[in-house]
Image 1: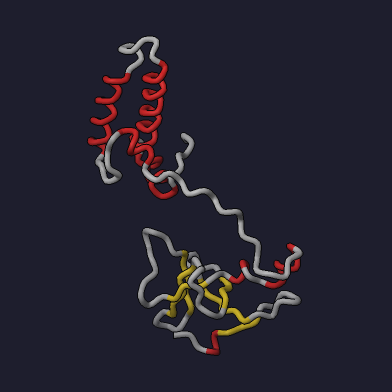
Image 2 (image 1 turned 30 degrees about the horizontal axis):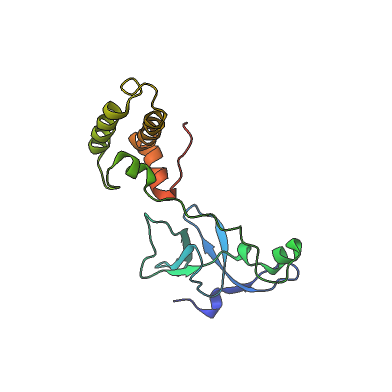
Length: 174
């Protein structure tokens, strides 16, 4: 798929690693490491004209059989390692704790594949049961009502629901 003629060298002083130049979907040039990398996030392929193309791999557009997974060179450039003062692999951000997947769905008692109508029905049912006017002085019911309302706020808005489904985190209102 790739040939030796595609190879170039990083011209940053002190790096010199082999790279391949690709053209992104927006027409920009992107340097990727020479070898495929299972930890990468960029799909690279050669089009019918022999030009190396690249795109970001997402859940909506997973890696296709004719593409190779590669890492952008900026994440492994030796020059950037010297700037950070490390000789080992580039610094990675600290791992985030895994989000509690589907917690908002559990609050409403629906499945993640539930339709908007199912979510609306579940919210209304729980709101009638837990409304503070029906349980005066019961702090636990009031807190549960707030949690159900928060879940409804996120899951009733298609954009916020999509962000929650992808990241497990609630987004701020626009």
